[in-house]
Amino acid sequence: MPYVAVTALSDVGLIRDHNEDSLVVGPWTLCGTVTENPQTLLFPMGTPLVVAVADGLGGQPAGEVASGLVVRHLASLGPSLEDEEAVREILALCNQSVYAAADRDPALVTMGTTVAGAVVLEKSLVTFNVGDSKVYGMADEGLRQVSVDDSPPPPPGRRTTSAVTQTLGGGPVFTAVTPHVAVSAMSAGDRCLVCTDGLTDPVPDDEVESLLRVHDDGRAAFELWKAAMEAGGPDNITLALVRIGE
Image (cartoon, rainbow, N blue to C red):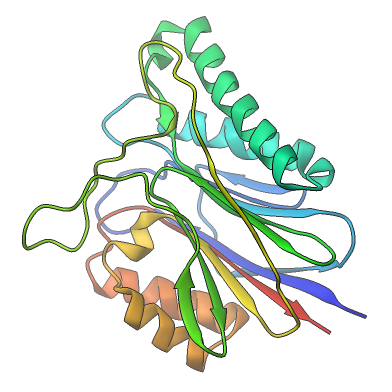
């Protein structure tokens, strides 16, 4: 019987003093805290399964509040995400909810978060993002980024930039978002990596691919985390690996 294996972890890194990332795997959420070790959860194929990360905006208030709010919405409504349009609708709702929460509390004004994730359906995969958190597909032909970064080009001589052009919340007044949403096939043995930029800023894609070619599930998650830490751990590191088994 086909199943979905999801291995996830979240860590503060070596520089930040607290974790502003949040994570959702089906009904399970982790908001602004860390995991001691990679956690692997198994789910039967059938009911839509949402797996996503949210990265609270650094330098602005209450990033962990914004990211936690978003993943709790996704956990609550995840089983209803049966197609691309449903995913777009829930991301619009998440954006409205972040702004509404900020409107109720002056201490939260301009809080915001990125989000990136995937909904595993019985015959397809719906991927989505707003901001610069990423979704990758990993198959026999290699690693492929399927999310679309909402970022300006990096400065000359640099591989990455911390600037983002679109987020959920993040401004003094409400601004609508245009999520990046795509549908693709996913078959037994294929994998999907959902992660915040605390992994991908310090660890180049070719190194991520090399690690995923050698390792799977908990060991893969551990080795990706280790690579980010050995590269300086400059930001919170949150990732989820999705694998279709049979």
